[in-house]
Length: 220
Ligand SMILES: *Cc1c(COP(=O)(O)O)cnc(C)c1O
Image 1 (cartoon, rainbow, N blue to C red):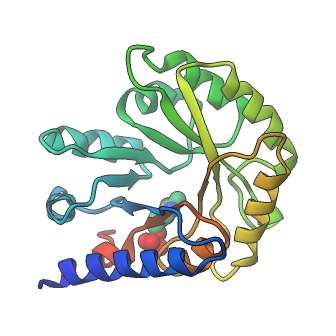
Image 2 (image 1 turned 90 degrees about the vertical axis):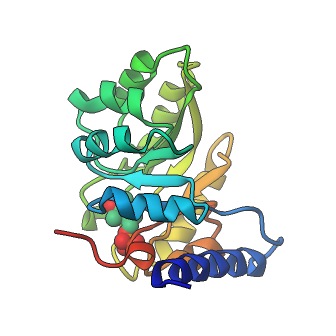
């Protein structure tokens, strides 16, 4: 087995084990391979091993790479900060968006998603670290963003997402508690990266976003 293949299978096994260990049994955990700053060949190699879900942070980079991969049945996740002038392209090019942090962004995506396409799967990014991080909705603003998403049949609200500062694994439990406190708790929690995905799964993650542990260090 090559390095990449053993890294991939190793991560898959750790995800499965962490899911099986949590109270209430496993429940499937989706692995999003974060391919920002990774070349086409690296994405293709992982796809050859069976990986389908890929996450990108930078719109232009994603738009440059996607046309070279249209022969593969990939599912694309946008996980980076969203400027409002980028929503149209995100709505056209992605299957999932993890980083919706304002009602205005949800509305633009809802208006711009082609109704002939599958609904865009949406997660609301929440700032669970308080002043430590700059992006994400305040927890108190989440119900308003939920309501904005519900106005659009072109959106399918799936859950909440967070990017806590490294080491703040308590944030995962806070995101799960916030979800449980909603009038209608959402099915998905996107949380956990290379350094902390097992802790995130223990706290209830249904989606983990892993980059360096799969691909090695990124080109800078
Ligand atoms: C880069 C990134 C990841 C992956 O981080 P790694 O530490 O490389 O696993 C996950 N989520 C988001 C939002 C990112 O920007």
